[in-house]
Amino acid sequence: MENLTYDEIINRIGYFRTQANLSLRETSLRLGYNPQFMKTIENKSIALKVKTLLDFCDVVGITIQDFFYLGDHYNKEDKNMLDMYNNLSDDSKQIIIDLMKKLK
Image (tube, rainbow, N blue to C red; front, side):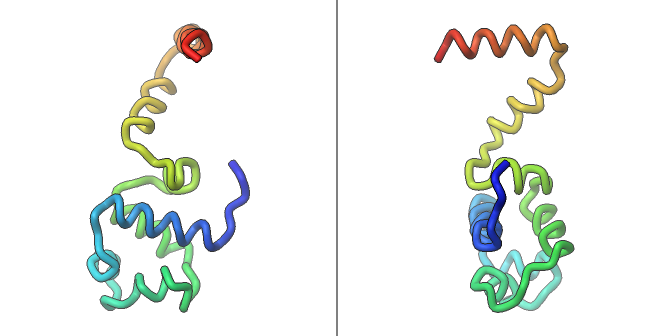
């Protein structure tokens, strides 16, 4: 994973909020803050706290790993595929890898 800048983290918040079909106001309220809270986060008027990021992930229905690993390329189908792959035996994983190489 590449090193992320603060701006990229804030951009990911906007991306996941939009994917969850939540307005700034609705997200703020679900987090338990005043209606303008997320606006101040996304326009960088106040600093994002780790607890807020963790709570945000719960609100939009992703894990913190999804937030950092998948970022703006997040796709539930990709995540489901990764989950299925991770549950395979080592031999089955190798078969999938070989198949993917042949399909390139």
